[in-house]
Amino acid sequence: MADLDDIRDGKEYGIGVEQKPDGFFLKGSNNLDWGMKDRLSRIFNPATGKTVMLAFDHGFIMGPTSGVERIDLSIVPLIEYADCLMCARGVLRTLVPPTSRKPICLRSDAGTSILTELNHNVVIDIQDAVKLNASAIAVMVSIGDPSTEAETVANLYGAVDAGQVAGIPVMGVTAVGKDMARDARYFGLASRICAENGANIVKTYYTEGFEKVVACCPVPIVIAGGKKLPELEALELAYMAIQSGAAGVDMGRNVFQSDKPQAMIQAVSAVVHKNMSPKDAFQMFNDL
Ligand code: 5RP
Image 1 (tube, rainbow, N blue to C red):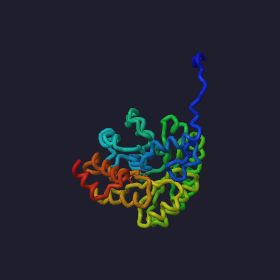
Image 2 (tube, protein in one colour):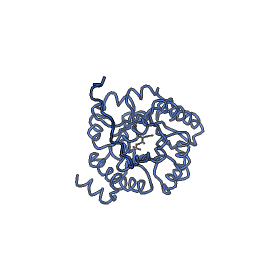
Image 3 (cartoon, rainbow, N blue to C red):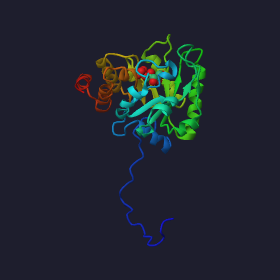
Image 4 (cartoon, rainbow, N blue to C red):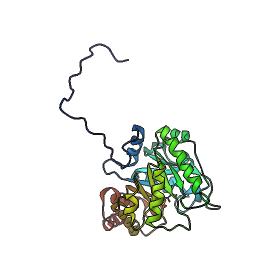
């Protein structure tokens, strides 16, 4: 207990100086509770409003695909350059150093793999996300896929309920089935459905007309990188997404499958946080 001697009357009341208004820097997040905002502020840099998430959750459906065979060798050296790490709990517990001091966006659904039919998933117990000190949980939603749409929207809904109790934001990840059109209409619809069902962040893919996808989604959008592209093209993709209003990237293969992954993630970060042009960022990539 504090020493009760010498309790002084307060006198610095700042009379005449108004308390700053409570605006929060991320769109759609002002009415969230303090813990949610704290976690979102770890993922998104409050100075820029943006994030570079490093995604290496691919193994949860693909196994040891190229670049994630040895997380300790390929991913751990990249951690220092990322704003947030997106991975599944097995890899987190076994291979990500808990001393990394990076926020975790925990892949929180699992079920079927690429060997069968994707997205027949269940969601992990929120208590495990709490134990892992997750800053967000990520759940796949496959809008337009007749066999998994209802199940994955229900997963998102349940994850949001659980996340609300624990104060953990939920990222809805739009899965694109083989038969879906990869256009702004589809990504706009899928992103909006995630947000309407309570997602605090949406992860989707960049496409032409992306400003419309961003405009009609009331929460921040981050883009997946998708398949490996030549570095300049991947930097152009990130640049166009940011210029269209994306709040960052959640990129995997275009970073860890690069010949120079450490240079690539730093170049991506310059595009995201400093609005660096793709040409300059590519020069930076070459120079590093
Ligand atoms: C799959 C995911 C992956 O993390 C995502 O695809 C990001 O990785 P990449 O940039 O390699 O596409 O969420 O649903």
